[in-house]
Image (cartoon, rainbow, N blue to C red; front, side):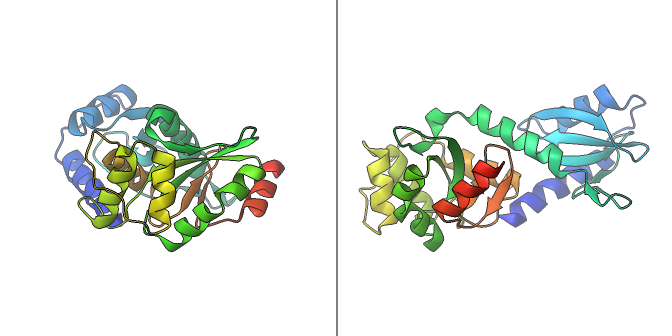
Length: 238
């Protein structure tokens, strides 16, 4: 998965380097990136404390592009004087916007009658800790946490985990199918229009490399399994 993300940015860098130089940074950078990356939404373009360097939201991620549109930097921008991470706050906003755009009608949701918080979990049907989290889904509900699942089959498209994800989505009862699949039960193979590939691509864009990956309402990302009580305490403290 990580290699796909690196390849995407490598291609983007080569395309930028081959493009003619623009004089105006803001609108011109956006126009250029939209032409080079028609399948990705180009969001805000903002100045950074580094002269001539602009922060650009690409899909659900943040990259840095020179004012002439020729150079791009992938990674975090850190103020060494204050030791402040200047990239993560922008990524938090981008993650929240990405979740709003994907829509709950394209998620598998486990919700108690009453809840105080919602988490979004990138999950792999065959991941051990994903299965552990799901075995405790009632505990999350009891702690006032609603769980929204997005599929992230780590083995990629056309893998067995991917096909299981599609089978869950195409089942008559998706929640029951999710529970059965994570209990190791074999599901009836089904095919239908589904968002699994879109979920996978979104996760890659967000930098998800392992599962479960828990996205909080704040836009912060937690890698790995977190027990319900501890997670509730973290959420209530925010």
